[in-house]
Image 1 (cartoon, rainbow, N blue to C red):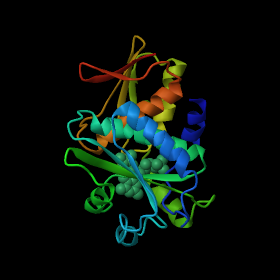
Image 2: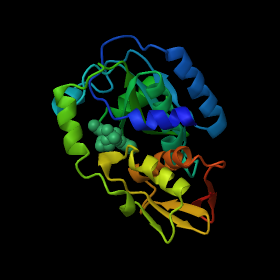
Image 3: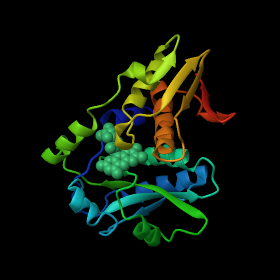
Amino acid sequence: MTDYQKAINERCSRRAFVLEPLENAASLRERMELYNLESGLRIRLVENDRDVMKGISASYGMFSGVRHFFALAGKQSEPRLNEKAGYWGERLVLDATMLGLGTCWVGGTYHKDLCEKKIGLAPDEKLVAIILVGKVPHQKTIKEHLIRSVARRGTKPLDELYTAAETPENFLNGMRAVQKAPSAINKQPVHFQYKNRTVTAEVPDRSGHQGIDLGIALLHFEVGSRAENRFGEIDGHYMLQL
Ligand SMILES: Cc1cc2nc3c(=O)[nH]c(=O)nc-3n(C[C@H](O)[C@H](O)[C@H](O)COP(=O)(O)O)c2cc1C
């Protein structure tokens, strides 16, 4: 988990990739298969694809060199599909970061139909999002700096992310890791509460990207706080005893 902390500190979304085969694909695939077993998700790794972001990357002018991505899919009947995709997808993001690769979550701006075809999505499955992955230049491009300065402008101060009467250090460390988490249009919608050593986390609406953001934030909190347990869902609330 401490390596994950380092990855959390280093990670940021990257949008300009180098046109090269995916290094460390075998190791990423191994992690992905482990996570699929543990979570029941059906994440796939697609390599050397030129179509899923085609046109979109050009018209938005945001992405370049995209060739590889994780497609985060699972059973439609899974009630916590978005949160699970967020939690386990972000693990892959941190694994890739530790391998020196760049990543970017993409929730909507890709050819979803094409992607579903490419991965052979079954009728009982749903595709939640993709995560771009690949080699990136060590230094961010000027365009990347610009996009990040706009995207990150609204980052919330730490104390807007939680409600708590007391704030022990392990809770605050968890929240610092949450503050660094990626979220769709950097909205940081997840609100945490701390009371009597119990942490809860919630978003206004789990049905869309906020559900993914919630799963990502749960993982970041677990890593940052060095929690011994994982969040569990009790009476519809994600809870963790610190
Ligand atoms: C669920 C989700 C969907 C996202 N979709 C997009 C997207 O479509 N395009 C994009 O450029 N970035 C996307 N992002 C990346 C966010 O913009 C980025 O995480 C946020 O601005 C914070 O910046 P950082 O990741 O560099 O810390 C998405 C992130 C998440 C978690």
